[in-house]
Length: 218
Image 1: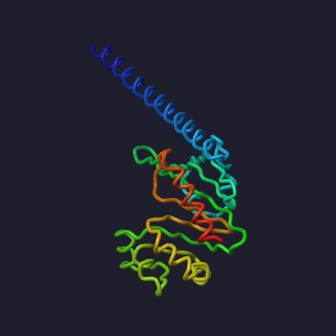
Image 2 (image 1 turned 120 degrees about the horizontal axis):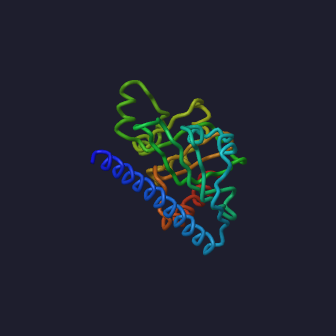
Image 3 (image 1 turned 30 degrees about the vertical axis):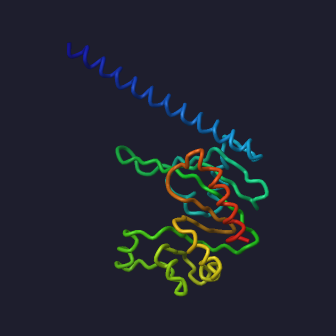
């Protein structure tokens, strides 16, 4: 009887694993189909494959150097957007019971015309404020108190970061809160939050990315 229960328990868990894998495949297929249809309806080029990982790592952007098992997918090339690519991206940290998959929908910009320093801009949080009390300082823009209160800005070359964050750019970020932006070597990556955006949010995100490119990176 015990052997019978053990055998059935094994097949029960095996069935759960197979069903889970099948559901994941289906959801990924449905997402690709939805994004492909959205891209076609707006005249944009879509590919189920994302940019090559080595090319992303070569940008020097921090997000493309984190974790392992990095993968990009569901690429939309924004026509006339000055080198804007929007795609899903994920990487894995830790292992075993602590394994965690991190997913994002990103807009990657090529910005050869403007000197982009290495920087990391993210929404301010309680954790970061505690870090400041412990001595971890960010880069302050004294003329923009809303920027200082709502964003955490860091970078290895503070002078270069100050040059890039002109009054016009700082004021733009004060009007557009809650963004995550990283810069390095003529590239900038932009996202709104962790997690893959729903398909119906992509068109709005692409429009925001085009505005960002025109008003911040031009």
